[in-house]
Image (tube, rainbow over all chains, first blue to last red; front, side, top):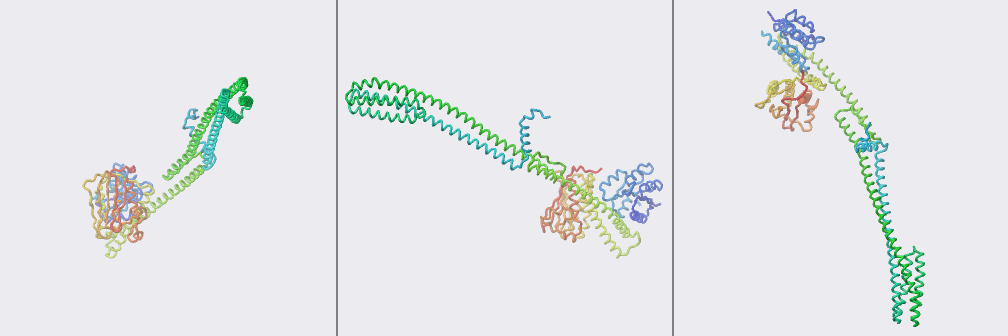
Length: 122
Length: 517
């Protein structure tokens, strides 16, 4: 059974790239475009890993991460936070919010895949 | 309210005077002129008083000399009278021609001395009148006596001498004594008057001299302080302006050129402050705009790079060799563009004060190794030797590892970019609580005149090299800012044709105060 990854990302192209990458690597993918939708899908879809973009309108990635990690039945799901390069100190903030991993934009799909495999070895 | 005691203290009197002179609504030149004229006036008065004292002393001396002469003349007449009596007595005893000639000679001398006396004692006409009458009588009697002796009537002569000449001589003696006494008394009075006048003049003179000196000193002191205080104040204000503080105003009590200067300075400061705030705001807008724009530019560029990599990895099917080659060009150009955008973004963030350091422990050795690993392929492409000289013992540093790596990578990247043949060496050591890093190359070197400029934004030593070598010219200024944010310092040692050594220091434990949460 293939592993399921939830991608929370508001930007269409980024979702498409990740989707194509993950499909070709044999992962199943759930997609959310907002933080709220991401939390809902985390509860209903039970993913094996969450890729969380930080810069999203309304509920940003930090808050969504914090809420997921606060839920007893969800906190075991590893969360890799994708931050904007521009904001230095984001890695520390991501860890503070409870993220398990951290990838800075611009990421190369290859690097992202390597990071995912740290948590979900094939 | 200020108490009486403080008003009368020397400091407040001084302040009062200085303030008063400062408030006088006259030009500085006029004030100085008035002060100098006052002093000159006092000197003139002093001179006049001195001259008067001198001439007074002179006059008194004249009076004394006159009295002296008078006394001498009186004494002479007295002496003559005695001589005359003696001469006649001799003639009476030895009535020969020789003694008679002597007596007559003495009589002439008597007349002559009497004239002299009249001349020196013109101011005593009454006494002299009486004296003259007695003298004339005496001379007449004497002449008669001499005549009688000459004609052999010695007894008659003796009688005349005894009855008339002797009493006249006595009377003359008395008159002379009176005159002498009076003259002596006058002399004593004159001496006393002179002394008194001299003492008074001395006091007046000394008082004037002291007054002049004190006034000159006082005026000089007060006027100079009334100038020095505002000048000091204005100077302090200018230093504040130079340090970027435009909020203070100069307060000067003067109503002369200095008050004009002060109000001009205040206006200039306000205007400068206004311009400075405008400039700051414009600069912040620019930085924010750049930051936003760069971010907007990066998003689609990331997508382009992402898709390109997926295509290269055959995710959308096998890629023919020719297209793969083109994709590599797309990717390398895209990465280059991303690097440029990131530089612009970094610098605008730094300038907008939005860049905070993420302080944590780091190993400078690892930083060097990361940088060398990243730059290795670049160096290999140009067949340059990239080597490291890392000191054996290096303490654990504290700082933003990612930013320090970026700073060092910029230097190493530049060194590789500008060096065509030879090597690039990265050295790291720790001295006195600071890391000392150096990036040495065998490139073309940098002329002394460019060595400061290259650390400024958008500057490369040779602007043609921007086109030839690429790059935004922002790398060095970003490195400089990052190093300075850590409390370090960067500089270059270079000579044209001899390569360059970029050196920087980083405190091992910086006190940046900017550690992010």
